[in-house]
Image (cartoon, rainbow, N blue to C red; front, top):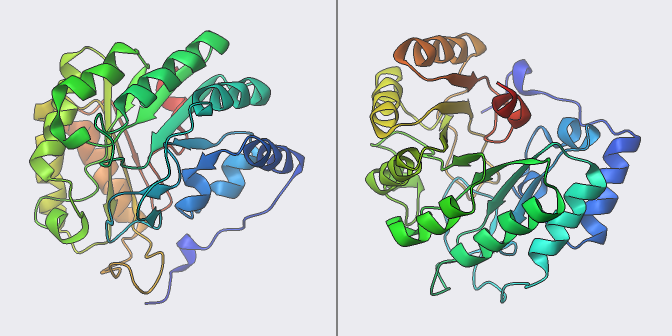
Length: 279
């Protein structure tokens, strides 16, 4: 299926892009920008922002929409929390976004490493606000609570898609488990955020039903963007949703009660995340 004009972007590069790339590489950091083949990497790196991915670059799950490498991960890098915190200081970030691969191979699924990373960022960058995009930790509340206890300003967990399609594209994650993660975050009093992809074959009615489920769970912020098939081995694109439909989703979400909705073809979970904390 040919991509429409509204999905064609110019990567571009400038001095800030080059410096961001140097910091990421010299500190042996992983980013979802590159591993996820994000279409906004040029824009974000050109502004000196990046979404750091902790826990390595090999995921224990094999979701059909995701380009992150899957397999047996290496042991955790105990210096990674400090490396990420140092990089944030070098980039002079006022707001940092952190995500991770799934580490179902670890007894605590990586929750302690998550808490250490957040704590180290706050220690070295006391003025920097933090958004984290966490896995589901298999729904284990004691592990979710470890991240909550580290007190990032925003905790996000992506639903990815509507209930009907969820088992078709997510290898282990469960729709209701993800809702329970959102609910746990909201219960703690922190800002709860989630994101979905459009174009997997969902209907507008199903998207609205998902919005209702998220609002009941306590979700504050929602992002909606176009699914782009990474390779021919991944789940195929069913539809390129028009910018007009994305705008309708944004308006419907706000009318339903979300505090903020980012909805456009190239929107990704961490795209313009600094705006969310400023608001």
